[in-house]
Image (cartoon, rainbow, N blue to C red; front, side, top):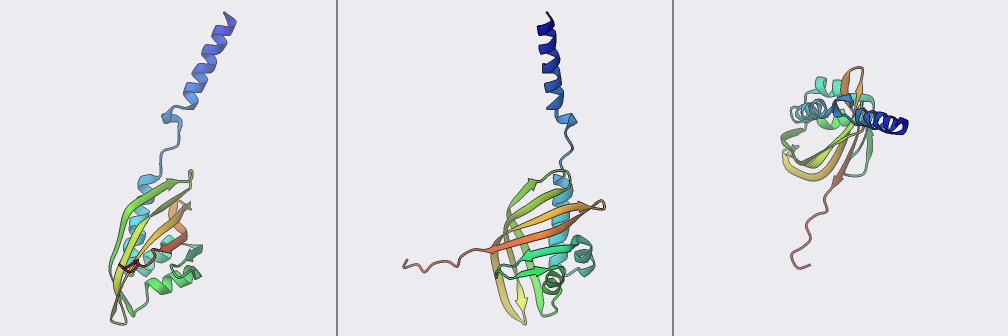
Length: 154
């Protein structure tokens, strides 16, 4: 009888440990909202929002392979010679990394003009966000360009 009681007690403990109500709530909605605000701030060249959303120790690997920091990111997205007409994300990706971190990524397209010449870039990206002082901030971005389309003859 003692063994049956012990088994029932352990089974109850196991069920309580795996109950979703005991798990911390997902940050998905808050992180995705931060990601959309981050993208919109880039599109509209909203320097104040970008400064608020970029961690002081932010790093980025640009599509060229160049590694930059917060200042380089701000310079790129507030450059007066660049006008953005679209920033679009397809196949959005979200990965929860625990209570205070997450990755948001997807297939990105950015278009606009630089010095009057049109440009359009198509790439994969991943933004890593952390919650610091109650705010979700970007701490790292990786951008990987897609290979150029091969010639039809190949």
